[in-house]
Length: 120
Image (tube, rainbow, N blue to C red):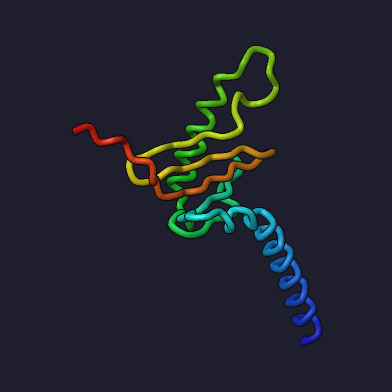
């Protein structure tokens, strides 16, 4: 009985280890972006990975995916590719950089350091 439980445990550990490796492969570049406050990796099925201020942020993921779907409606006639590969959403304090690669959407949240010039 114990050997069966151990085998099941090892199989589950193996699946968990492979999932962890896949997730780290998805996010290794995102974690190295300077000044990033958080990130999301999204597919049509939902959030694949997240960290920082965007960790488990399903709402932001949904909003970003809706923006992507809307932007993809603006395809050039006859073009198979989406009309863009990267989109920036600039707010007063933050910038969300959204990149499409394959079937995945990568979102990075950074501090917005660009301020409008002050007119005196």
